[in-house]
Length: 147
Picture 1 (cartoon, rainbow, N blue to C red):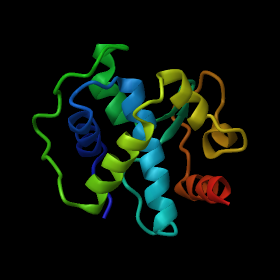
Picture 2: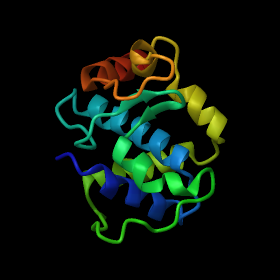
Picture 3: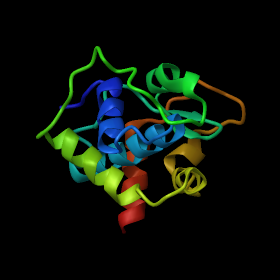
Picture 4: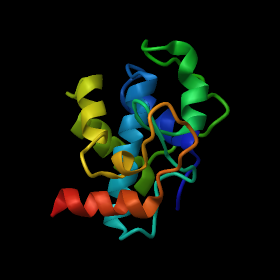
């Protein structure tokens, strides 16, 4: 079952011991969301909110706005109102993504999510916000990446 984006963002921060930036949270969640869609053949998204195609890649607007005050510094706990998830499929896939992407710098995460021919690239328009990246396009990217 998909979870609220800010709950997922909180899990990323907790898993990284709060040593993660706004940009990193969004990129990690995008790749975790892609994996969740791919493994469920599109039936189980990670988050309920749609990713949007922004200049620096896929973004969950609620996560961006909740954490933008930190700029490119580490995000502090601005998720007090949201529950902690552990022992769920969603928590497991977020932990897996955090582990797999732990050694990537922000620029590498951007390059990864800007994959040529990928979902972000198909919907991105320079300077535009509000352009949704459909889950079926994210699933298609997953299939292309794993084939």
